[in-house]
Image (cartoon, rainbow, N blue to C red):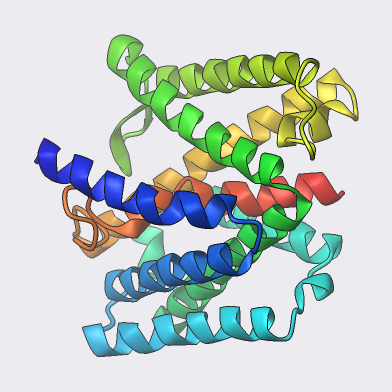
Length: 277
């Protein structure tokens, strides 16, 4: 299993890193569209679509991404759009996490399917807008999510006592969330310190938040970490409702794509929202 996980990770890095670093954003748009469309297929399967129907939903998502890219419609998605996306994520996360797994099944299936596809599409949009803002900005948001995930895992393993949401994800603890906060604050400190000596071509999410003062930066980072936790919990809620352990087996040794990007789904759009407000 470990060998399989390592091989899959190396293949993914071999595809994503060149697309991420390439000056032409087309390659990142293409890679992102493939991954988001595959995640949409997983979403359809988790919400009672058969494989062919789920493929149709994935193709619809890919078409929406392709139309935005072909006609360069990014300018139409302004700060009010991202504020709306952020509010939807906050309201959706609060509603579902308070109501729990049982409430998910009461939502009409068409709304679940199409709503999830639109939110996945908005993540692709936020990926491309982040690239436009700057590679450093995009990199800093990705590192923030990864740091929160890693720090939460190890702090939860070492100190976890109080369950965060036992009915949705029994392994997650408040101590893990605290560790994620500390890890992200440490990352922000290191990045901001390094930026005094390195002339980054563009601003990171940490620098953009710090421009409004330390209090805004701290509150913004807490908000982003909490939304990364919400993304993780929401995917766990949907899988539990569907009786699935993983979102799929598309990534050997890792499960599905949604399993790997769940924390990023709300965090990247909300980071764009914070950067543009």
